[in-house]
Each structure stands twice: as C-alpha cells, then as structure tokens.
Image 1 (cartoon, rainbow, N blue to C red):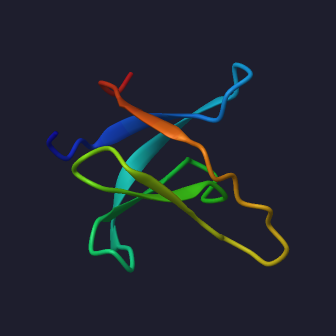
Image 2: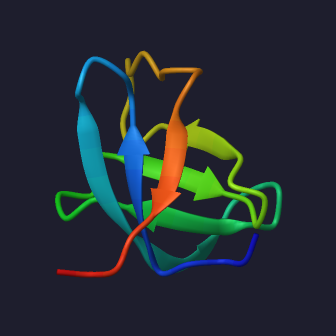
Image 3: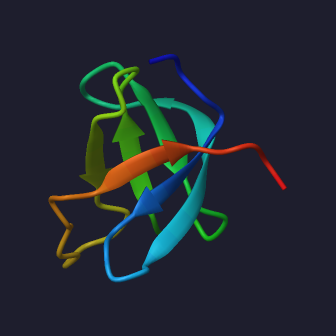
Length: 73
C-alpha cells in the first residue's frame, strides 16, 4: 500500500472522519493525519495500520479504526 494524502477513518457504527496528511511524523516514523479541527489525529502506516494519537488530555482513544484512502473533495 502506498501513502495517500487523504483517508477516511472508520470508527464503526457509521462514524467516519475525513483526515488529511500533515507535515508531522509519528513515533513509528509514519505520517500523521488530522481532521480539519485538529482534534482527530492518527498515524497511518504505508500498510494502512492506524494508531490514534491524543490531541489533548483525557481522551479515550479507540483501538480498532480502519483507514480507507480517498480523493479530496
């Protein structure tokens, strides 16, 4: 899988968030993606593995999240 500029993060139960690539890298060395608000942050590997990142304190980060590459709207 290659690195994309935009992904949909699927949290299940029809809860989907569009994120775009930032200039940051996560601890695993993969790109960090953010939604427009900056609240949803995720490191996504070139294999589509998702690691959610905290954007503030007291967040309960989901474990099972799927990333689907999308074209920007």
